[in-house]
Image (cartoon, rainbow, N blue to C red; front, top):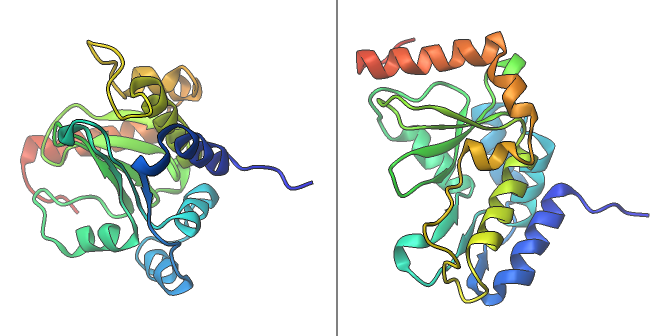
Length: 202
């Protein structure tokens, strides 16, 4: 029996709820995935599965400012060649941007925390650990969208709940334990140093 993956379940959740408001791109090709792995190294299984299902996606919500967009390979690699100050640490894969200017990043460089998802704005304080793995992050993101917007893309409650570390920790309790780990604390300290210095640190 073929078991449905976390990514499959999350994608089916979006399709069942939003229908034609969910715009999926064609799957990433082997060449595109190869370029991504050449830049960042091996990809977590769930992230690779998502890209092989849809190379980026968009949820068209009722208010244009609410539109949700998940980056594909081209957008991820495009960010690598754009100069940023302070620079983004190696191995930080851009997943999606938020209306407040922050970005959600998949960390692939450091072995001890590879696979976790951070929210961080380069040059700013206020980092958040959002997920212990990409699969949990994507699952939580789809649950948030379905709970927050109806099938017509209209927000169902005001004030709107935030998609943040508090929301994510309800279904990913490992976040709380991971926050106390030395590798995570070291990574956050480095991001804080970048924000305080306003320059690149190698």
